Image (tube, rainbow, N blue to C red; front, side):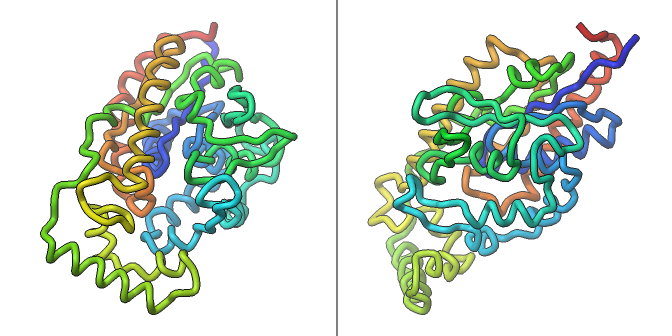
Length: 319
């Protein structure tokens, strides 16, 4: 019986996307190696790095990156359609040793983006790799859109959070999908109250650190000590109190609502053969410094379904 063509469809999820590394690690160790890789948003980033043969390098960087390292990659671009312009991220991707073009990758690869003019889904299966990744990860409200082939492109999660349809179109017989958008809704939007003394102390410490490096917004972000950042998570981001949600609270929940509805709708009509569901609901969209937790949960989630994958592959022939 001919071996089925196995595809890995890696879903969107911002910082939760580090879980894809753990999923791939577990699958490969079990001898389940994909013939096709496709991804949306962070799924596109991790999938492209894997297809370039550089996953070890990405894993080492992610595990070693604290919030200061992550903040150093942020380049504010308020006039470019988002808070972050993304030039430093593109430079960082180039430093990982990726292939220059999608066609040069070791595995067939595709990424999903959204044409923000027409709302259409865009499949990127050829062309410059880093720019394609940057387009796919362009989270609205955070990253500015990317102009590629005459179109302004943004996050693929707006239209296809878990790209099963792309995997099937690329010739897959057996699709393993990784969905990071399960059970995201219902979390507290406004944090529990903290004492006035704790809030005042945190704000005073933040102000003192910001005054020491006033040259730019990013300098101020870099100056925030870890202790203050932890307390800021229970308050508005540079807000006036705890009774209203902060900017990133609203943005994160809005994106989660959107992706939850779109994911359910798309997967109902385009189910994969096996679904991997990492339990990463407690990792916020901007928690890129929590890679070790996400990777561990990705591995655990894959290990839970590997027996199912092996059983299905053992009895399945190509279409």
